[in-house]
Amino acid sequence: MKISYSKEADALYIRLNDKRIENSDEISEDVILDFDVNGNVVGIEVLHASEKFDVEELTIEAIKRVTVEHVG
Image 1 (tube, rainbow, N blue to C red):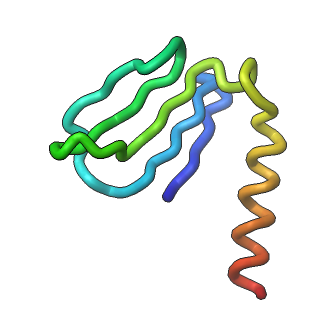
Image 2: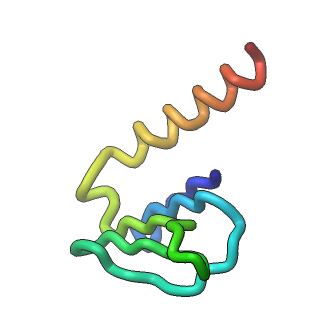
């Protein structure tokens, strides 16, 4: 899983796997799901992310978890 945030676009993207994206659907305002050929979710995009949650806190938590998992 890969999580990326673009400050310029104010968009958060969570890529669940490397399968090819076949279709996308906006399931609610500013939330888009990407699907593979079998209809499984492979990505989640949140637009205007900083209006919905604290993106700085998310980044710090992700780094902490990776550090603990690899060190511990």
